[in-house]
View 1: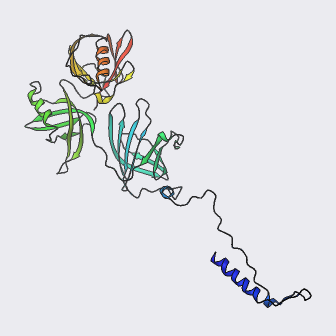
View 2: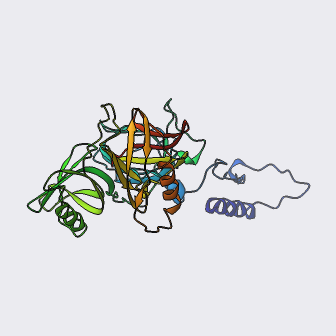
View 3: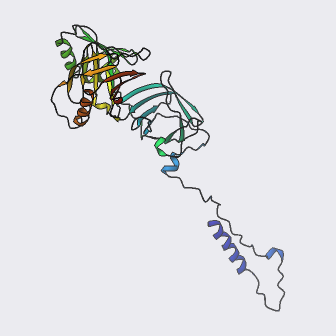
Length: 373
């Protein structure tokens, strides 16, 4: 605009110095005295789709071929699940090439903590762990990860397949349900996880004390290893040694063993977790579980402990009336009533692959899986 004003001023100045030219005089001027014409300076050409810089555009990758993990990042969200209400993900990407992830199967309470290294190819993110397979993601921007399909293309048709970046790096929740072999000797406890065989010393915290007392009072145990279910977290102690910190003790399972996924499953000696009752999924947090011993079964139905005798011949199975405690739990009583009623109706049992199916009149009325945590 300033340039245009200067040019206009020069033009007016030139005009004021022109001689008075009458109608009867020639209008030809010498070259030296011809006026300087003002040429408009065009405004900069802008793209109609161009957006001014703001918080949104600043968050987008500036290089549409590459993206860089040059700072520690946290992504969270819930992705679809074939047989549960969703899988909650918390993924931490570290600029040194490591990742940590927490997968929680909602409605089933199954939690996996996974760590490894990441590989970034342009915008495709691979999370590498030898024991677990994780989804492949695509950086839609440095604020969003999108799951890819089997062909490796990002699924952009729905935001259900998207994880969003947290404002800052967020620490992973390390707690998870665990099943393993517990043993106490000279007030020193160890726990061997059934899932991966880790042997962990148990920290003597307030939440561990009820477990210690019950173990010491149970004459059947007598310093022997016993399967236990609990909620805990693995963390390094002050000496850098991986240690189990118990958040909640659930139950001891005498005569149970860790399930062997490669062995032919038997009815007895396995802690079975109830997964379905009459085709309805049972919330994992209710911890509905049972174990078959010789001629006797016992377990936890979501609110109360129960036990009963049973008879088995080949695949036929009959369960006698249950003896149970009589607590009331508003969030569990409906499921508990259905489970205990169906359990007493069972007339046949089959172990198929990794499931225990209990039948009545040739219809599956209860479905259970080996508890691994």
